[in-house]
Image 1 (cartoon, rainbow, N blue to C red):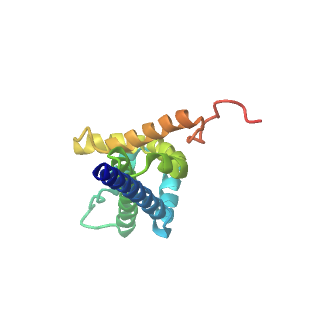
Image 2: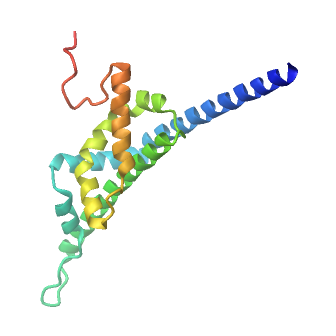
Image 3: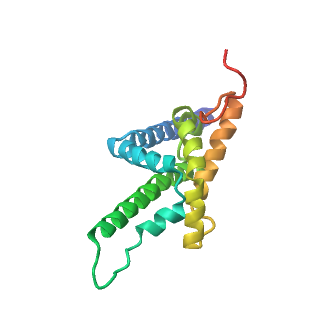
Length: 178
């Protein structure tokens, strides 16, 4: 009987430790998302998303400008560099959601806690970065790239349904708000 009690208490301790780790790790992802660097990055990405520019056009602008008559136009180089920087910011933010989705998918993060804290942005960016993700898949010939971004968006929507809430604040609510 004592052995059974010891095994059971060990199992409970293990579960509590795993839950604590998931909550702490989720908190770390949230803290990273809210860091000054990420807030600035999101602001830049949001401004670009608001332009509705296709990712293909941004990519094309990011390529080195052609040399005409042996002259390199400094302004054209600066514009290409700015477009490349924007492209890099898009990749960085998309990579964040890829990591967040992978960690959630494999149980490293507490998905309910993540949903409560960042569910709305996971859905929003999962949708708004969709054209960029599709472009990257085509450009890199990697059809599965950023799959966990979509998985995360869908998981947050599933949790919306379970909790009776909406993470996606960009669309009309399910029912009129009273």
